[in-house]
Image (cartoon, rainbow, N blue to C red):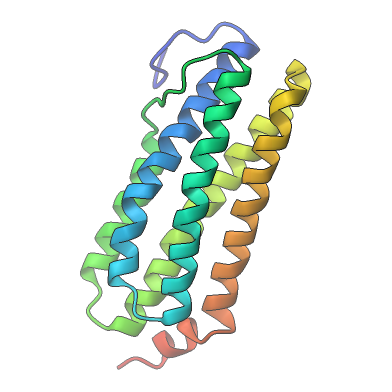
Length: 171
């Protein structure tokens, strides 16, 4: 069935697949963030990425609780979308020599990941509500709200904390 690693016949199957997708994505993000933290030079960006790494670990814990409530084993399924976003961010960051421009590239890559997560969590919440999984909506909503806040922080770092200005003034 195309990209799906399992047969999806029902909305419950699709919901479970979506949970496995975001579970995998969050775990990949915990591996990618330390590399970005190491490369970033703007102190607000470094602090924001470190804070979001801690949040991401808590989001994985919440997803563990979601699987538990659904009486399913927590597991991920490979997500080509998040793999691609992380790979693209790594490649672009590897090509940028100027540190100011590198910080702008890191913000852009991190925001692309946040937008993906916001999309996924929004969909999962809608599906959970439709399927009557009210006991997991709270966990998913908390994760969604954290992703939206992380995106807003990245936007602030880019626009008000000078990352984009410094990058545009780079030689």
